Length: 166
Image 1 (cartoon, rainbow, N blue to C red):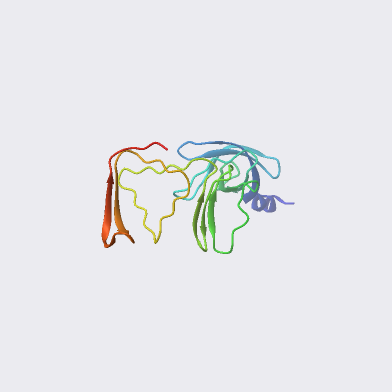
Image 2 (image 1 turned 135 degrees about the vertical axis):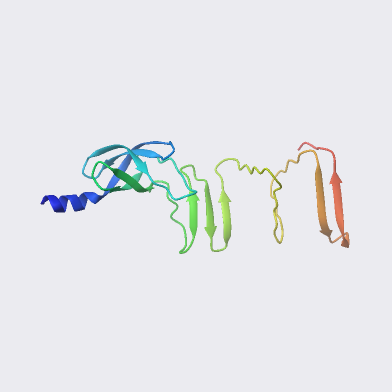
C-alpha cells in the first residue's frame, strides 16, 4: 500500500473506547482498528445531547488535517442499543434499561428506577384522561378543579388542606 492510499484509509477509522472524561468538550481515549492508541481525543456530540460511554463502546474517528488531530464524531454501544423500534421511531436509552421512546402510538418513558420532575414554575399535565395507577402520595395543599358526572356541568372544586399518609 503506498503512502497516499494509507493516508486516505487513515482519514476515517473505527475505534473502541478505552476511557472517557467529561470536560468542556468531552474527551475519550480509543484504540483504532489498526491498534493505534489515541488518548484524549475530542468527542463531538449533537447539541443538547451528551453521554459518558462505557469502555468497550465503539467510535468512528476522523483525522482532521493530520493523524495527530483525531476527533470522535459518533460513539455507539451495541450492548445496550434498543432494537425493537419500528421505522420512524426514536429512542433515548441508557445501560440500565431506562428509555424514552417516541413511538408511532405515543411517547413512552420507562425508568429502571425513580422518575423526578423538577420545575421552577408550574407543571401542567393535559390530556383527554389522566390515569394514575399505584399508590399516590400528596403534599400539603391540593386544589382539584374540573367537572364531574356527579356535579354536572356546574363543575367541581375541591380544596384539600390536610395531608393523609398512605
